[in-house]
Image 1 (cartoon, helix red, strand yellow):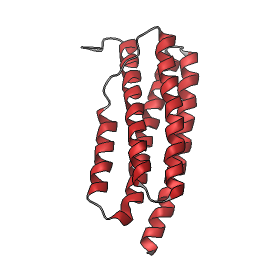
Image 2 (image 1 turned 90 degrees about the horizontal axis):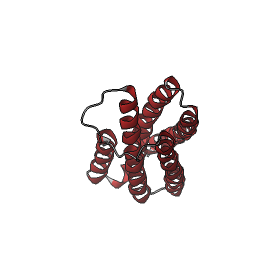
Image 3 (image 1 turned 30 degrees about the vertical axis):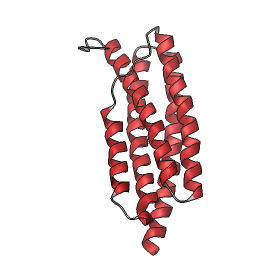
Image 4 (image 1 turned 90 degrees about the vertical axis):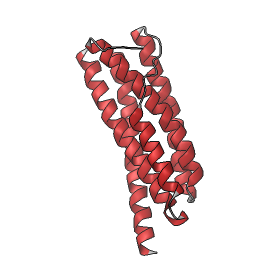
Length: 164
């Protein structure tokens, strides 16, 4: 889409496209993690967040519509790398540790998305894009809530694994 980013609008649009790619990567990763975990409550957690992620994707696509721009799909090497790392670790780890690794991978992805949403919200505010800000803030709130749930589950799983 861009050979060179020349304006804050270019940067915002590129980052928004990168966020969209990140959300698609996350959705794929959530499916892998849901299939990999052994605890039913973790399967539900990943499944519920996948539903939220689908809505987040729709919200980001709506941002492009508001901007009057084609939906971009700028690369997101960070989320691809986080997914590859989690998958690689799960392949070389004892089954008893899969849930902990899956939670860690999910949590790492949430933190990246939270940082990205925060940056984009600041950029949208600076450009007085209030309708976009509202959509991005809704997504950010879901990401923060998912992060808290993943962190609590990771703590429980880690303590249970250490006790065993």
